Image: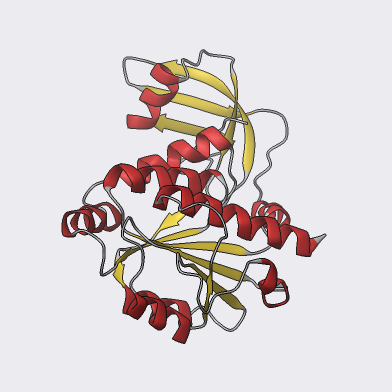
Amino acid sequence: MRQFVADGGLEKGCLYVEGKKFRYLNSVLRVEEGDMVDVRLPGGILQPMTIAKIDRAAKRITMQVAGEEVADNAFGVHARAAAKELFPYELWLFQFVAKPPKMDLIIRQAVEVGVAKIVPIAGAFCQKGNVESARKKSGGEDDRWRRIVTEAREQSGSPVETEILGCVTVEEACRLAESLGEDRVGVVLYERSDDTVSIKELSGTLCGAKKVLLAVGAEGGISPEEIGLLKETGFYAVHIKTNILRCETAALYGIAAVQTEMDSLGE
């Protein structure tokens, strides 16, 4: 289900759209007055709205709530509860920085399947230029990743407000993981099979987890020293018995494997 992701909330039942968002509605979706649009408001609420007025001279679109207003004084509470039913746990992707086109794809796919947080990691095998690009995009100097997140949510209808954190070192990523509390479970995909487990073998550990952290390497993988640091932080090294996967394939495969196992535990 496509949706329009709004930057701001309602003002007396109306939403005013300008700038790049105006161009998206006007030139991409080609809306007309009277059209119905599902709008994802801040906090996750999905609000049906009508295109009330299009002022192309002022480049401004006015949208009005259609039917009952979903948002109320407890703005966002109901939406978060609904999102919790779909995603009773938070999935974090700790992604070692790959080449820019691959990172774009990984981020887009992670957003579409409901990943809550994406943490770019500058690992030992990551290329310097790729890391510099990731630091700019995750730090706000370049808004490409923010636009990818919005477009992916609009295309997929995801209620999860995916956030991309700043690019960090492996040591910083480990400290971040430790700060997330005891109800977390960390999983790192590892191309080597020694001293690893399968996702199925982690069923008991994953059961009841509030946050699942998935670490995936870049093109060169993850160094043994980095695997050691992640294990010391509580990550379980998982070896997937299949063909050798590219990093962008491994990220999506790993997310799907974790979600499938978590969904089976909730049944």
